Image (cartoon, rainbow, N blue to C red):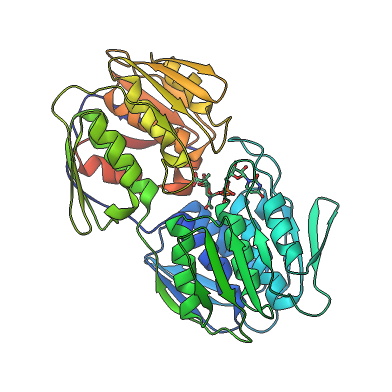
Length: 421
Ligand code: EPZ
């Protein structure tokens, strides 16, 4: 396996272009199963998770190929509606094939995803929503076995859980409702831009959807969907990661081909902490030459501060004078990066689902490991400002979600490279 090596201390300067959103692409790939016709998906990032989803589509009997950012999917007439443990256990998002398979085939067997390093991650809301549409669901030998007697029926479904709305449960129920009879209302739907992007793709396929991006989505079932061509929205978490990278190094970075309107919560926190932000139509310039100020951060469903940027923000607060409190309200145990950051000299204490961050003057490079994608990104950011050399191990996790991270950061002036373990 590879590792990423970073020599800290360089200010990032220049321009970086954002890739398409991983978390938009994965459900859209699943949605392409709702027709037997070919769909073309553009601006798809070249990432390990996308390759895993391509493998899953193949194992379901669909044709799928990826070349230069474009994915072509042709499900054909005969699907084999079984998502095996081997694939679902490497990528939880595989669970979003459940809705489309059920809608098209009236039957699906999908391995239960199980635990995850960022928390328990149950799927009760997915099952509740699909059950309300008329699916008969059982758990057998570690698999969700879902059947529909005749056809799924539209319903009024409340999809809120103890931690608020769910992105992939909303996606799953939306996709299942596409070919159901009558109208479906999803209450407490997730408002994330990835849900809106999925709705845009489904509309191009011929779906009738209203209210995406708000907590109530209305779907009128249709008899047939067709293949569609769609370009994926920019990745807001990759964008945010480069914004924090500019801030943490005291640099000046122009982030291109992004969607500034998806970044309000992060822009607010960065501006409060003394970072200068200029937003253009599809660009964000992030600059810092003064001292940072400590800010408190609480993660919330969109449009609140994203949990997927919590670890990166913590790397910034780790070198910010004063005390900041970072509270995690989506995944209360998503703090795997704390112990690793502390190995680099930060002073962070956990108190329930909050991290109390006492800013330190400097971090010192160290070998570090994290088994979560965003935690690994936070360690890279810490490595950019740490004195000496940082080695981030198990790069596999970064490769799941960041396209060419070491190339993009090198072009901004960082000393960062990939090496064999
Ligand atoms: C999506 O996961 C993202 N993944 C995650 O990104 C992201 O962290 C998460 O949304 C929150 O924004 C993809 O889009 C592929 P949720 P998802 O269901 O949809 C609870 C990354 O790093 N919940 O919105 O699985 C859940 O435990 C990843 O790219 C239930 O209780 O997350 C959590 O507390 C990691 N029951 C909250 O809801 C359910 O049935 C929100 O989770 C489902 C979720």
